[in-house]
Image (cartoon, rainbow, N blue to C red; front, side):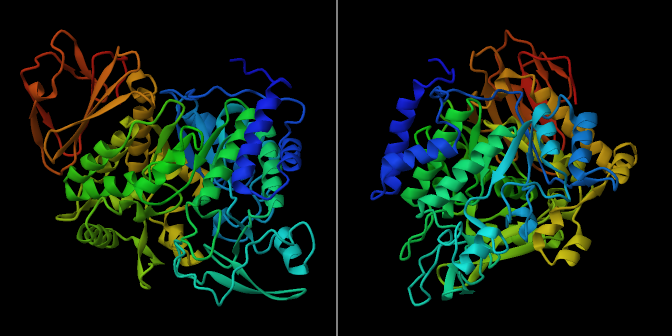
Length: 589
């Protein structure tokens, strides 16, 4: 199928948009709304015809997650400083960059957007963003569930004028809203004085983050224009923030509603018809079975976050028991062609606990929470349906989360445990995303928590460029050790066809102390047996238990060691990772 931008493709696009709109807005003028979407989306004069089930990625793809000001030098704009760091330290290692919200905002470190059309001047400008997009695949947040209470739209809502008068969702304080599912304990409705009296707006996350009303098609049209603007400025990956809560219906949980799924499909239709290689990612921090629904039938999200992985992997490494990680891994369906998992174990947020529902017993979750508290973590709660607050998120830097074990407390194996966690994540089916602080082994930032009053600030350290560069050059500093090991793993990974995001994956059963799985390239030419000691003691296994092909030569990609005697025993040091392959590059970590 041709992907050329032609007017012939518009007939099919119009039809698809009308089908979406009929499901979202049954009573709307679908023809008129379709034409408005085409105009706002820059598609009136022609479009691409996207190919179905096409993988827009390979083993060389990965993402770095960062704030625009995670590194500052005091002279250049933070975005320029970030670009400089990428070019000097990660060129050829990192392929894509997720710059967390870089727009003017009023709270939540960017996720209460005041103006979707401009760059926060304290970070830089659109030229800085476009310059990064020219060198790396750029992911941007599409914060579409809510907007800032200090935005022009909300000011217009209060003044009862357009645009904005009907852009925000309102609720009745007398209604029974107890069924609503949300990740916060703050009041759901916020009272607001407007030009025509008191109104109560819906606030899933905070009173400063007021939920938008997608039942009003004008809101959808606004975001069609925003998406077009971002595409034209070089954005190629769209992270749909908190999208599960998009459509509200009092009397229901107001999460994962059918209209939400259809809006994601519609926005994907607009995006991929505008730019053939653009990708949609849904950020849905919910139990695993619910998260998987956002793939749709390979027609909704291209990528979904593997939200169960961070808490399960941390639990595994501090408990020395991989049985729950194996059970989860065996339950995960292979992603269809044209879709993939986005794997991560650290981000700007904390370690979410809701994705553990149905995967760990409550006693195990409680033990994990206590262990993390012992390692300096803060714990954020949410209001459960039963009316009480329960742990929702562990706020801690991943480096400090892995400083010891539940049984033994802090120990000297922190770096080994931390690198092992990433060696597991990097080898799994899917595309890896690494938080910038994972590259350095950044510790808890208690001072920042005290300054902001926000638990999540513990994992949002801002490095001074000079201090970071000095740390990365200091042989005595763990930051240099971690950076070298992490970039080494990334470089090795990107050369292996068996690590293609959609390559075959099969779980191996080598006990509870050794986590293991097999990857095989799409063309079946390369196999990699991924073996990990998840305990703080040496483990021994028989190579014959792995079923290696005896006519092949096998090498560990991590250490560079060859294994020729397949009847021998392999000794794994605490938290050692092995990538055993029959086809290898001459590179070690």
